[in-house]
Amino acid sequence: MRHHTRRQFELVLNRFNLKLGQTTKVMGILNTTPDSFSRDGIYKDAERAKDLALKMVEDGADIIDIGGESTRPGAEAISAKEEKERVLPVIRKLAKEIKLPISIDTTKSEVACAALEEGASIVNDISGLNFDSRMASVVARFKAGCVLMHIKGEPRTMQDEPFYASPIEEIIQSLRESLTKATAAGIDKKSLIIDPGIGFGKTTEHNLEIINRLEEFACLDAPILIGTSRKSLIGNLLNLPVNRRLMGTAATVAASVCNGAHIVRVHDVEEIVQVIRVLDAILNSQGNKTFQESLI
Image (cartoon, rainbow, N blue to C red; front, side, top):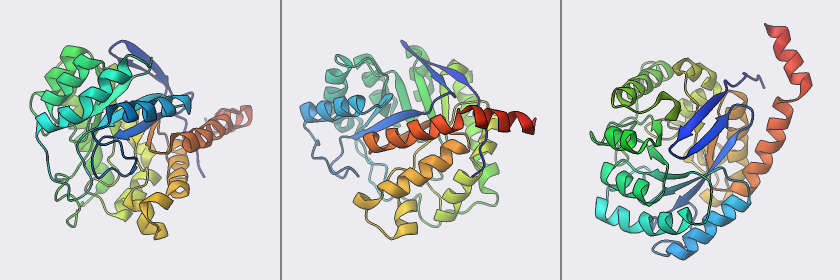
């Protein structure tokens, strides 16, 4: 497997700063939706959700990403009121107990604002600031971090035969436009993260190409987040159900990190942290540095 040296960044997230590039950061997924991938029974149970998040922190998570609206293919939208009822009690409890960044996974500025007021410091917007015209100004006002993800279409219809003439080039251009929109609204460039959006309006072949060519996204001069955990990409390749996709997830995580990913978003924090720690040790070894220097 080829290895592309990751650029180093200092990520500014409201009251938190994260150094990226020397080690891979792990974002733990905590979904408070009735149809969560994780099937962990935390829907409407803020105390249990908090306990699961604390377990992720104990297992080595660097960021906790909390979502209250399903974004899986075919998912129907819910109201901002319902979304806030699902996520705010969890954020409120968790912000008092951990000293790590909390991310709110939402496309609604009303939800993002309420979450940031309760202690979140990152907005993870799958639309790349394109679904809600007020989102960028909310992120800027709180000096929060922001994940700008690429999606083709919207969750309900995004997997209806997605087509690209030039997938990587088109995704990069869309993310470039999101970055421009973000900085124009006053969001600090040091607070921005890009995510090519595995599984969001992409076929299995598109997803494989993104991972294989991930180093090309370095042209956007921003940290790269990748989210492959338990997704249909892995299910399609291995013909396995969601609860048996850990090893496939680990393979995609390893390939993504070798190709330049700074942050990986996963359900199985304990296992993926082990993968990441060994992989980072290999990539940061003196032998690898000597090899990289020989290429210059």
